[in-house]
Length: 298
Image (cartoon, rainbow, N blue to C red; front, side, top):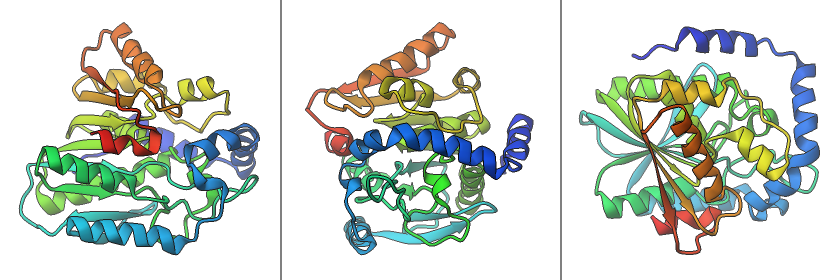
C-alpha cells in the first residue's frame, strides 16, 4: 500500500485546520469572477436539471458497457466506482477520473449536487474500448452520484482540489490495488479529473502513465487565461512536474475547445521542457470537438 509523502501529510494537516473564515474568503473571491465561465464550461448548468435525469444517463451507460456500480468509502469522502464484473488480478489497471460535473444551479447559486449532466468519463471509457478492448474502471469525483454527509459546495468549487479530496483518491487507489493485486495504474483524467491524476502521480510510485483529455493541468494558467479567481491548491505546478518525471504523459486537446484550449496544453508541455522534462506529449484533435464532446474524437 502506497503511503502519502511527508510533504503531503504536512499540507493535509495544515489544510484540515483551515478556518471557516479563510474558506469563505477563497470562496467569495472565486464566486465573484467564476460564474459566467463555469456556466460556459458546464453548458446547461445555468438551468435546473433534475438529478433523476443525470442518474438515468448513468444507468443507461452502465448497462451499455456491462459495468457494476459500487461505493468506495475513504476517511474523507465516499467515491462512486463503476467497474467491470471481474475479480481476477490486474497487473495494470486502467482508471478514468471524471470531470468537475455540474457545479452551478443558477446564475448566483452553486449546485446542491455536482453530479454531471452526462457521465463523460464513461463515454471516454466506451471510446477507449474501441481502440483497446481492455477493462476500464471509472471513479467519479467526491459528491457525484451519491449522498455523503461530508459534502458541501466548497468541495465542488474552491476546495475541489484540496488535500482532503486528494487523500480520498489516495485511499481509493490503495483499496483497488489491494483488491485486484494491481502493480501499476494507467490513469485517464477528463477536464479537472486530469489535475487529480497529475497530483496523484506525484504522490505515488505506482502510476505508470497519465492521459489528460481536455485536461486542466495548470489551474493557475487556466485562471489567468479566463481572468477568474484561483482555486485552493496545495502544491506548486513546478513541484508536481519535477516529482512526475517517471510518469509518461499524453495530453489530448481539441482545436475547437474554448474552455481548455490547446494553447494551455502547449504551455504546460513547454513548462515541462523548461524544467528539462521530456515525458510529456501532446495530441491535437482537428475535428471541431468542443469541451464536453471531445470524447467522441478519441
